[in-house]
Amino acid sequence: MMQICDSYSQKHSLFNAMNRFIGAVNNMDQTVMVPSLLRDVPLLLEELDSGGGCSEREAQLTPNGGTYYSRRDMYSHYVLLKSIRNDIEWGVLQQAAEEATARKKDKLNAGPGSVDISRGIAEDGEMEEDLQKQFHYHLSGLHTVLSKLTRKANVLTNRYKQEIGANNWGH
Image (tube, rainbow, N blue to C red; front, side, top):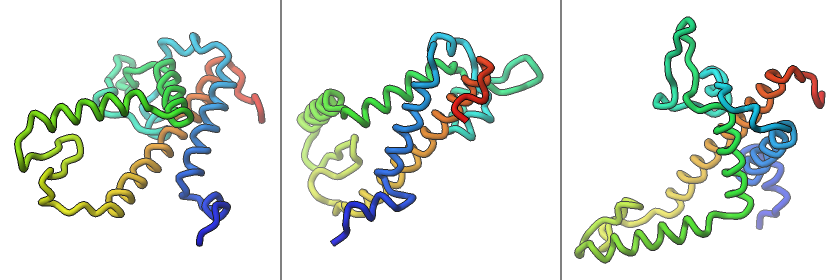
């Protein structure tokens, strides 16, 4: 039987990834004293790439020498990161309940042998679910996303310090 403390010592543990993310967001939240200062301050695409990625949709070319910026400002990233932290800490029960209701409606409107689009699984049991494979796939994806979000929170914190001229805070 595996002990709980063993999982905490592993680098790729989901618990550690969540704790690193929550810690980074808490640090960001404590550092950013005036969140409104983040409005209209873009993050460089290079910063976002090192801090959690930026989709091509968000990126745009600016007139000042072809430097790429995110369409989102630092404030929107700040709000997004805090929202995700709250979802991890408190859960997303209301959203999950709404999605379950929508799935039930979709199933009622479909005929026999139909496919549940939200999960991509045949309803009449044609496809055998490999739960362990699905679990590992989603666990790996969750770990990757949490790592990117953690880097994004750290980049935002450092950029905020740079913007207000307080680069040596807490060091």
